[in-house]
Image (cartoon, rainbow, N blue to C red; front, side):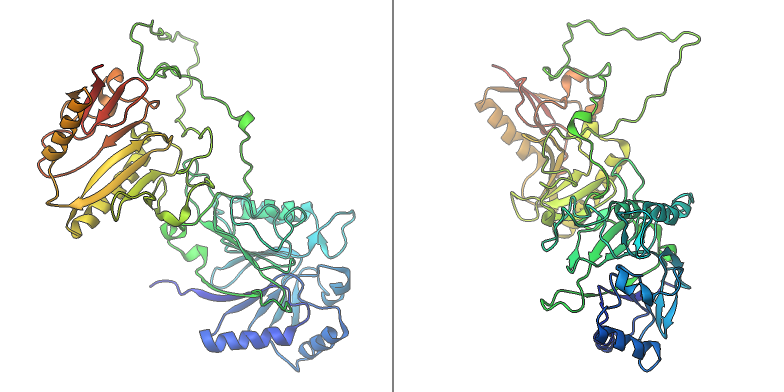
Length: 507
């Protein structure tokens, strides 16, 4: 039986407007059903005489919160008096102060981490502030556990510094002064699925960000950061947020790590500066940057003989290269038009072609920066094949077949184009004849590659290097009598590959 989601409400700065908040909660519950919990971030209490009098009604029991309500501690000197116990306590019926910092685990397994106050700029820290020492004491017991995957919810009054990096920018907040670096470090390490803050008087929902490095770490869940406005704002900015959540401990691991289409890079990871990037040492098979194919006349390097006592380190797996400049197809790049993305896997993603040839023209692309299929690791190839298989089944149900080709022209990122065509549109021989006819007009000689051959198995001088542009065809049309795993595209060496045919300019 599937776990029932918990319905939770989160509110921004209440500032003593308790009756207005709880009346709004009652209205929401009448419309959407009962909620299990109300969480309040930012300043819960106000400092005006009216706010103090209103609180006395709840404290004395003359009024009551409609649902269990958890609040954070003081953010200023004037409201310290409302919190008699720094470790948390019940302040009134259905209103609980969580404490200065800690982790609360409910009966459902929902894990809630919290940090009250603002970051201290002086020593000793005032009672309404936290220090870096407080942050470390909160996260160290959690992250030191080898089974720790993250928390469900993180509550802080202040924003984390730089949360907007790689994402959508907050419009109403001064990013130069906003946020705490200590909270950013806390969010980085606790990996909350939801992180709520207030204190800035603004409503801001950041695009979800991933908690793992793509192709370098095991896939993990994403985080959503949400800041809520103060309840008394007159601009109708959102101050109450409703959502449903299944505790992480009860979720299927595969469901937990699913990546939404608009996911971004982690804003707290420090990017590698251009000057700090190390160029990989050239291997014996690598070619000089000025050549596209091996120069067979050049002396080949001799292999080193390992004698007794020599230390041999195992070859490390090769990581995808980093783009030299902006890339339109790296999923984490700002240049990616994410509204075209259809599906995101662990290693590849599916997108609609911006300049589509026909309707339903789509692309399969690696998430990492790979230039060609020849460069892909086995796990990336495996997922690419799954995408191909699923799309072929889909288009077959629509009475179509796929013309598939890998494109690498004026781009450094692999694109597997998939163009659906009607079943009775053409045959492999039709395509082959068209290329032969065009080749003759252009005085190009066509040499067919061996049937059932793989590009990686061809001699180095007879397959495309990562340097020149080309296209590799994967078409599966009726009447196929030859291996259609060639490539197309004119390169600087006056060579290109075409639909299973090796092509050399005869001039």
